[in-house]
Length: 176
Length: 189
Image (tube, rainbow over all chains, first blue to last red; front, side, top):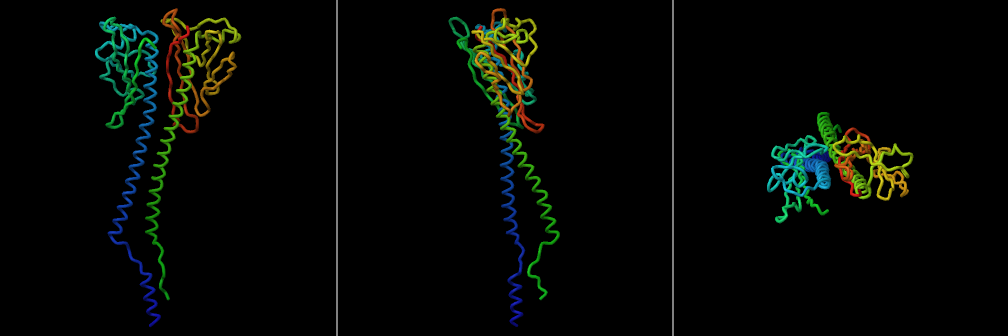
């Protein structure tokens, strides 16, 4: 009898019970949440890293254009506002339209001034970027000479439906 | 007594567990590898841009500030006491073919130069005892270094064109690189 009881106790003690449905659901939910969070973190990390890589390249293109414009300004400042779309100097090129004049600098390396206008500027620079410069000039009302030319450079690229941008602002004047 | 105290996993259970692990682990490690590779590429891009910017800024500021005349070193026996003849053609004459070096003289007739040496940009100024001062280090490699010049008229300062490609050194086929291309006009003329 005592032997029989001890065997029963032993069996009860070692009886294994399967997981219940609730336990399984909780486990799967926690496990899934962990993986969803991990996947979203990895996805965000990869996206931000890619954006930062593109940003470095875009900044390089923006700085390159800024230096090229600086050289153009030093070579021939001009000084006059463009009349009848005349383009003999830096100021005349950058005042072809009022109040602002835009250019699409999508060639690499930059060899010359493109036609004015940036409405049709597409992402063809390095098959990914577009580089737009928008100029606005401040003119001395008495002498009618251009005192300063302000430029907003923007290198953009698209990632899905989002357009990212690296902007640079600069001001050129004859006194520098 | 013939009663088993413990029961091991069945073959089916083991196969499922190993199958799931065999699927999950490669996916996990490939994602981790991808993240690491992108991070490394990002830091490499940062490094080459930093060194490229520094090298370009150093060359540009020195040439712009001190450079007066661009000369052809192969014409003279020594760069210390040559007859100084500027070689930059006047536009619209054809510009010179880009060369992987530039030799210049400053106002005090001191020679200085930049050239490609061992995949690095080397700066030389014999009068200042500067011999092969490298503007970039071994972490990056410079290629396609080119200098050329022209002037808009006979009396205007030379305009220098500079271009080079900077690439991260190391093994692998997907090493990041950036091409630099710029022009500037000398001030001391």
